[in-house]
Length: 409
Image (cartoon, rainbow, N blue to C red; front, side, top):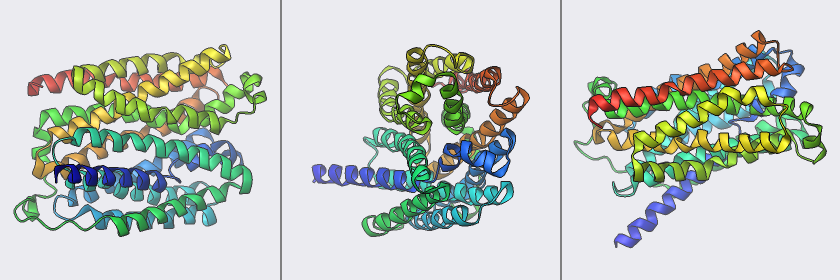
């Protein structure tokens, strides 16, 4: 009986990881196509940062409501409606986006869809799993966010090369539709548990969550992590276009910027899962801090070495991509484990709100620094922009040390 329950749990984990990846096929489509859409629509780097960042603004606006509601309602229904919105927003971008404002509008609604699938999907999963093994399942699930983002870059680049940029968003819409159908068919509704949820008037009361210093430390650390991660993901393809111009041998080898970016980002899956295992074995706060210090240190120099020997630059990019993702699952698992069971939805909502709020600001700030530094053709502009990511993630270890120490963690 126990063995059968474990198998059901792992099947659910596998299913939701698959639907997460499919539902995210439009996630990085715009960042991957910045080199195509920026000249087509006459966008400067700041405006491109707005279009990228507003996606996470939509996420940030919706996630406190959608995820907190899962403390009272089954997350499945919210997940299904959000998948439907993902279909509509991706098709809208494909057929109606024609410049800054229309692109921002459709990306904003795409971000709302992500809010109702990624973190709501995590709540859907955690509600259906036993306490034992939950941290490992959470780490595996959150690692697949990186897989989804990576495959989104690859699918956008390859599809746009074959059929034009709008086709990349049609593929994204198809992924959200398949996710909707899979969850509707294979995930059963969860029976309401009497007395398990907070009173109606207390659903959106975040004060108990803020008083949980251990969970709050991981949440604020997650915001520092997302600041670096989303800035890196958004501008990676554009940076590689610049690198290709400095390194003709890379282009001569038959690689495209989106293919190299996909490879770098895909390595985040094992890094995130392994990072959580190491954090569980050797102290979560200590290990996360070491990962952040390592990735932040690389960020301080990365943009300045675009002309370095090709083998060295690629090795640094791979190490950097792994270090960025190594603390992702550990941070989210830490917050989920530290959360009070009846406030898990509200804790995850705050976790996502602050994290993806940083994810909204980071691509925009990166674009502003690029413009101030002279544009995407200037190595020093890339240097300062990446250094901004590093300075942001350096706040993570400080936050973890201060708040976790107060909580006695």
